[in-house]
Length: 423
Image (cartoon, rainbow, N blue to C red; front, side, top):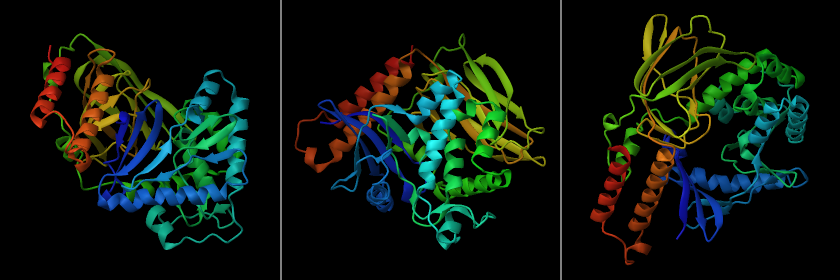
């Protein structure tokens, strides 16, 4: 039986885009599986296989790029071989750490040349599909465009192996004209490694590749509209929590009063970056207000609340504009698992990203839990495997096999979590 070693639920999306991504291992062989979380998402997952065929044909003459193989399974899922190697994001991060800027610029030149190779000579048209997803934009029709656009060609989706760039994720591909500058802009803005560069260096990158400040503003709007297009505005994350086969745990029972964690906040846009808060606070319940009156020109707020191997419970995030407060949501994060606003971090540099809509102030109420170095990894691993077991148990193929009773299974989960959380 396949052993699940990683899982990610995309419940924050609209139902037609909700998928479960798992990495499974069987007899030493690893593979990645993307599965629709409901019938509404079946078409979206099936389209990934279509994207694979189209992109493979498009890049057949490109020796540098290889599209990771994709297989359509009988249950409507798609499967990919798990590729070992260093991601372009990790490679860039190491070059930045070593201050090897010339290698970074060389890499970006190669990346940009690949995008240019996809351009077509047809005049750009803002089709209905384009407007529905990205909104109407005020950009020149003379810019270079591609008619098959993989906008998720970001650096974390490129694995460098044997001097080739292997594209491992191509979920978001559109079959209408999209500026290649937008794909480049999106790759730069989604890169945590690139964000570590100095402000003038990021500004130089956009200038070097001819992406004006006006374009950057338009691409920012395009990205915001794309996020709205995919985002689930109705279903609450709490629904996922109650569907999972786990027992609720009272985090107040954990003795963490003598432990501290960092609070780090910076603001950034495509050209500028500024640290505005950096201090340490006690593990437990906290509320922090971030004054943004002088930072309207920055469109992103990047917050780090903890070290690795921690759990962050987000209770409430509010933003004030013209004196009026409103609840806002997290734009992105790098948590391995998210259940009912509990974010399980195993990454070395955990972070949340909020979008700044010229807010005067943002306040965040949260609770950070840290028990020991292995706590989060144990809980994430156990939840994923229990979820996998439940799916297998409910499958008719396994109904006649010898499996533990549901009562014993639930008791085992409950006893395990009690052992971790309750001293």
